Image (cartoon, rainbow over all chains, first blue to last red; front, side, top):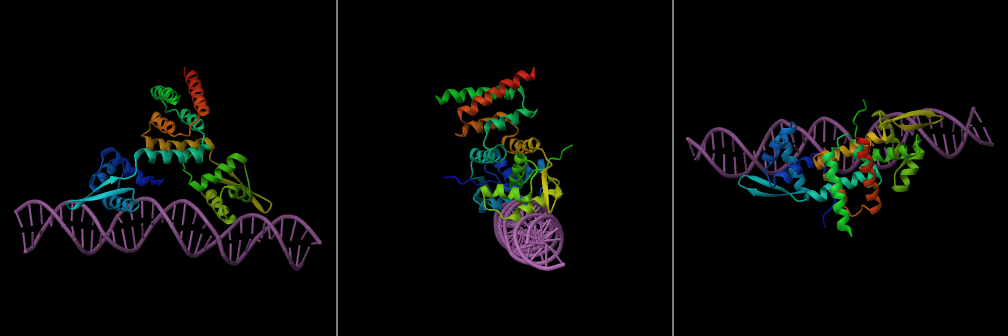
Length: 127
Length: 127
DNA sequence: AGCTAATTACGAATAGTTTCGTAGATGAAG
DNA sequence: CTTCATCTACGAAACTATTCGTAATTAGCT
């Protein structure tokens, strides 16, 4: 059973890189993060070391450096984050959350169509 | 312009009470929180004092105590929280988030119907 | 006025996150 | 083998969140 560890914001940024690009070195992750924000190499290193201790990452020696990979799944992690908001902000009401999402001007017609398709498929599968 | 202050988890619990019941004393809020979890009176007091400093709450003297009210809106706060998850975990994709939500076993048919209704209304209003 | 119960104020302890400086280790190149 | 660049390890500092003990204040009651 996977533990329901909620990563911090900084940890999530690192996880995003590893999920997207697969197992990577600190150097690689730091380069990707540097595109988005100023961040020192040792800062990223330290964070990834801590995440290894927490078992969020695993690492393997490769020459003089290490290759880190995410241990926790992208899906289950997203579930934890979404559940948290669903519970704390929307009292567990998916439609309440949906209403908020639609109230955001950001949802395009294209997205809306995708969502409708999702619901349709979901209901068919359910029977 | 409303600031995009993201309340902490504990702060959110207090905000939920104030949003639900309107302006309240520390005693009242603490009583409500105590139903859900063990929490000391001075802990709640301190938190609400800090939230006042942060301008998340306003307070007004009433006899020997204070009445606190939420300054930040329920809707905009939920938007901030939802946006955060949408951006950090789902790269801004509402349908991606929706997929995750449906993947959760928790979404009932009743909720699903409400969501369909929401989308229908939303599309009608859009034209 | 004096007592009591409730409230606020203050500050400290704890824990967790985030950042980064510095030192030490290591592999590669000459 | 020595030098150099790169990487890891370690620890400390700054910051935030959370909790709560204790002291001071206040309103109301007799």
